[in-house]
Length: 126
Image (cartoon, rainbow, N blue to C red):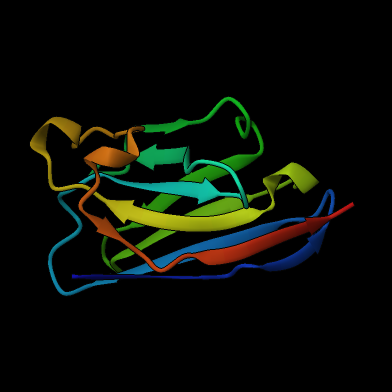
């Protein structure tokens, strides 16, 4: 099983980016997925999660109203639309998937995830 993120880059404050996460190697359409981020010197933090069907989502308070998580199970792809970006959003962003049945409606705890991508850098300049 493999997750590969793309779409990161350098953007000015107030700008937008769309991250993608391509899944392969197993069926991901029946498990929950999420986005996490880690800034230098900080712990990995929850950004957003989405249920196996895409019908339930949750986002961290710090990005609520600015970031939107979605998925296309036919394409085995997870997305994170990021608008109104701020310098404090600068981090490496990781997508992840969890096999746990208890987490199928979404999961905010990074320790509950089984599969991780390599990360994509997002840098927001002021």
